[in-house]
Image (cartoon, rainbow, N blue to C red; front, top):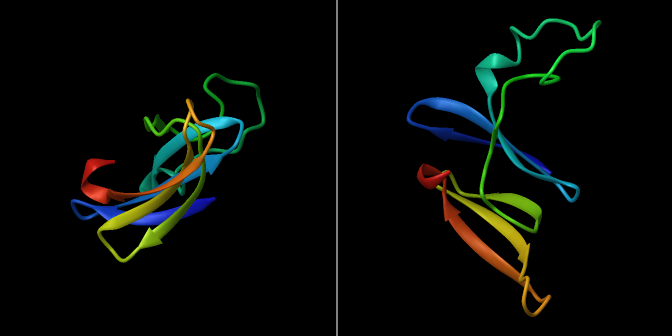
Length: 88
């Protein structure tokens, strides 16, 4: 999943994938990214990892919250959490 949200007047993207941690990307860095024609580390745009372990889905809930579907490590059950965007 990829979703957009605002925090302190800036636009961000949250990227969720089952094999990678949730990533937070400053949307303003995307347009300035040069083409990836040579291998480099880290590959791609600057990003931060968000501590949302075992997250499989994300969705916007209004302008101030994000929904995160996470698997509980102990029980294996899924939990739906609402997270304030200011905390991300």
